[in-house]
Amino acid sequence: MTGETPPPRRLMVDRETKPKLPPYLKLRHDAGRDRWVLLAPERVLTPDQTAVAVLQLCDGERSVKEIAAKLAEEYSAPVDVIAADIVELLQDLADKGYVKG
Amino acid sequence: MTEQQKANGHVQTVSVDDEPTTGVEGSQDVTAELCALAPIGLLAELTHRCPLQCGYCSNPIELERVANELTTEEWCSVMRQAGEMGVLQIHLSGGEPCVRKDLEEIVSAASEAGLYTNLITAAVTLKRERLEGLVKRGLDHVQISFQDVDPENAEHIGGYPGATQKKLDVAGWVTEMGVPLTVNAPIHRKNIKSVPAYVDLAIKLGAQRLEIAHAQYYGWAFLNRAALIPTYEDTLASIEFVEEARERLKGVLTIDMVVPDYYAKRPKPCMGGWAKGFMNVTPAGKVLPCHAAESIPELEFDNVRTRKLRDIWLDGSAFNAFRGTSWMKEPCRSCAFKDIDYGGCRCQAMAMTGDPRNTDPACALSPYHAEMVNFAKEEASKPPTEFLYRNPRNAAKALKAKEETLLPAE
Ligand code: SF4
Ligand code: SF4
Image 1 (cartoon, each protein chain N blue to C red):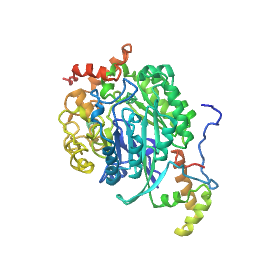
Image 2 (cartoon, rainbow over the protein chains, first blue to last red):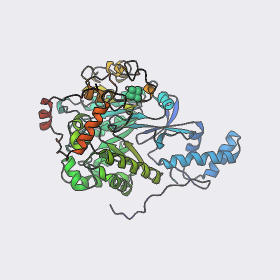
Image 3 (cartoon, each protein chain N blue to C red):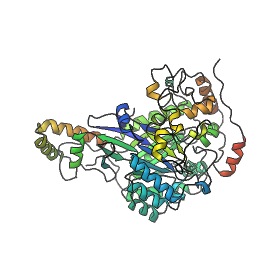
Image 4 (tube, rainbow over the protein chains, first blue to last red):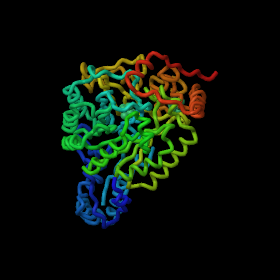
């Protein structure tokens, strides 16, 4: 152990954040159950359709704002509502260690 | 329910923990949906061999011999069957799974079957190249146990010289390779004061998760209760510390805690319910609804050598013995909590009351509860005893001595 790296900090998600999923988080379609699951160390997460749509766009390039705009167009929904919803979703996942900035 | 399992509207979380008695844990609806047709977690105890000799080990006293262990092909078949039937997470454990020379093939089979593959290791014999190979084959997550943060005490507990440095090395490689690391902290009387130091260690190592696992009194740990049971005050202090640290370290470190139920009013929903979402395969291929199920003499277990995993899950007699709530006696039978805690742990009821259908004595409504609490407090107030180390020689000795059960309240 070197102790040189700064201690990790909590990611605070806002509309400028460019979220990405750590490589160990696996988004998989479970054929037997006919649903999407997110697999993490000793956890199974059950994302709904919205969450799946959001997570599939979290590539570390797009910002939350851009993701919201894209989904707002697809679902013809108000972009502000969507953005707020995404921030809440991603903050929750970030607090569990599953989304990085 | 912990912070981790709370819903956020779009995503819910169910934990699939390797700790004995934990099993699956999450909101009832989601867990029920996920586990409707198949379990979501499987603990594969690849071997009982282990270079360490921890007195808190929950392995059975009668350790399985090498000659009886499943072959490579048999384990690979277990992995394929698990994937096909809908298991999502596999915990490769033991004993020490790295003792198996064919761990590589087993990891490949698990990964090819689509299983999220967790390695639960004491890490003292794992070399860098081997770890690299395992990760290439699809290993998803590594969990390393530290017997204490203080190296000297850790050696005393695990009975393995130089263990801590080896573990630190392996932990460093794991995070370097971008693989998520869990630090497992098996907590008992001889290290309970180290809980804050474990949190610091996990952060320093860049761990994704820390498991504060208070010893569960099965197998060797049951024999060693007197050496292991911490005081009520220390137990509470450790729980309070963890709850505070969890809040403080949101987004930095996930902390899971397995709490001891000796001092609780209601029992844990053991395994998240018997045969509900989790199964266990022993080194010799016996399929158990829970890690300690072999301690219940009336149960008969199927073996993967002679029956398909899915059939065992659906129709195996041991799985159906305590599935649901119809097997219950009073006070559970007419209790409002029966679908929440399922009457607690069958193995603990067996160990302490002699009848697996009795209410878990961890429940305040059990007539055995007062005696269990007194026993725990009494043991904890005595000067600490020495461990009976987990090794074949002590196993032979311990198997001769007969365990006594508690007496119910008048
Ligand atoms: S608890 Fe200790 S002795 Fe038991 S399997 Fe784990 S490392 Fe080995
Ligand atoms: S009586 Fe049984 S069901 Fe009721 S709280 Fe106690 S263990 Fe749970």
